[in-house]
Length: 423
Image 1 (cartoon, rainbow, N blue to C red):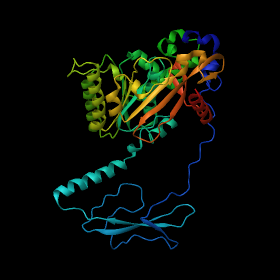
Image 2 (image 1 turned 90 degrees about the vertical axis):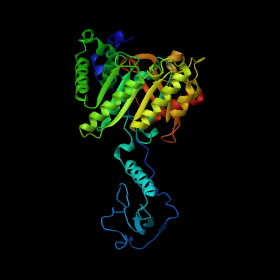
Image 3 (image 1 turned 30 degrees about the horizontal axis):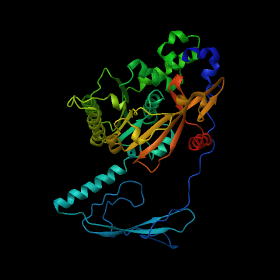
Image 4 (image 1 turned 60 degrees about the vertical axis):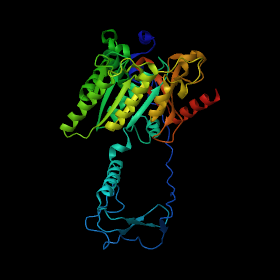
């Protein structure tokens, strides 16, 4: 179908998505955040008096100012009481008292004390808020963005799974400064991988990325292609793509993570490494080449989880499903060799595309200008989520000819959700 696009899309249609592909829908007003005061708990009391000041005589010199955002690391020789005043809109000030213990002097106690302080320091690290994916609903589901841990994106073949993980990787690069993305494409050779990155990022037909000589009659698209390639070159300090020619072995991938980590540390960089692997079921183990399927993928799932923990990084993998009967939406148990994956992954996203299965019989779809056919909605179901309590679905309007996905406006998302639950 890609080769026929120029027959019914003009150059203006392709260049101006708002007229052709509707890439820039009106998202409407965002929901207002609930600004009503939250209960503080029994450790504070309301007061109408002037805000209380910390007891300076009890507070050792150099103590961190109370109320200032950031880690509180006490280092006092004697226990003491500190106070803090919390001002909430529309309420009287609330005074909270803290009992701050003295720093321990015994070595075995100091070890735990230091572990707590390290936890507090790490918790306030700005990178701990999560790496932004460029998609509001995905970031909300992950409580701010991608975080350290093993995440599985599982779905059937040829529904858009590779396009999704590729676009997430590219958008993590675009929306975060202090990041280094290692993007392993074990399914696609490098030309196909780079075509996906350019197509999804700059709204260029995949065929035009791969074979620009056939699309010189669309000069603005060729110009966007050039801009996208230059953007890739500009981002080589924080993005690297690998294909199966580099390796399919877990041990080699970990060695490369170690190499990049050392290089970044040598440069004095604080960049967060983020690893994407497409796909999990193409990975192999050098140390255990003869393991049967279940044992092999159990070991690989363990490696993914251990690697995320060992290097404190996100490890995001796509994965395959068992052969499904019919056109139903997948469940956790449908993941190929799923037992260890379900246990080790901190999040499992099950993806689905009803148009892929049902064609013109699909209920969950969208329509676009100049095309009478139903277009695919890519569903992302958070079937397991230890980063947040969100277990719902996110929806994306999928443009396969560019391997690109767009978040719909909130009303459209609600409409797609109602169709899913009415089926």
